[in-house]
Length: 178
Image (cartoon, rainbow, N blue to C red; front, side, top):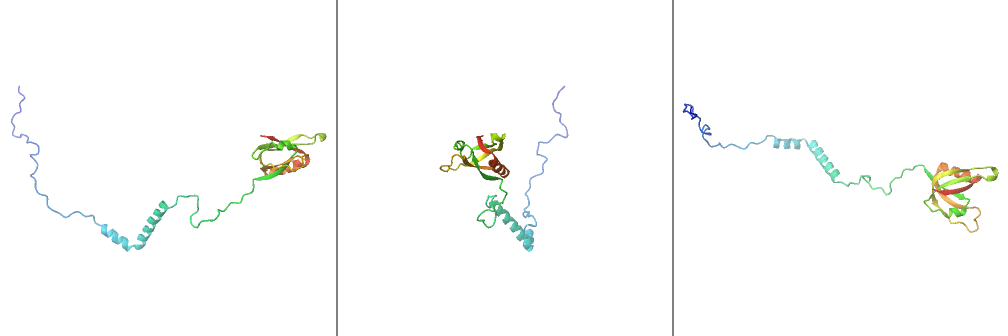
């Protein structure tokens, strides 16, 4: 048995032999997309739309290139910003402390508790009138007035200031550092 190819009437041709012969491509005009010039003419005819589109593009460019300060108001500059008037939450309360030497230890910014001590002869107790209040000022003592204690200015809420004023009329006040 032999595996040699046998001649057949339909023998295959070499590749590319079945392609048609080459010919010259005919010359033709370039392909143009219609409507390019027509759209421009239509845009010119509709001027309102053209002006609106131009203004929109200009506004977008100005916003993109404008100042980046978002906290400032746009338009005319304001000399001073308008402040919102709110009720004062804290007030300065001058308090006379019984022990003047203790007041000399205090500095502005210290936190203190204010304690009202009732007179021991009447059977009174001591109670805290203000907790963790800030010392704002320690005035210099006036010469010759040492027996009445020393003055200290505290920053306290309005309701606490009323309690301090009431307690100072009936009790001796003392402070403790927090």
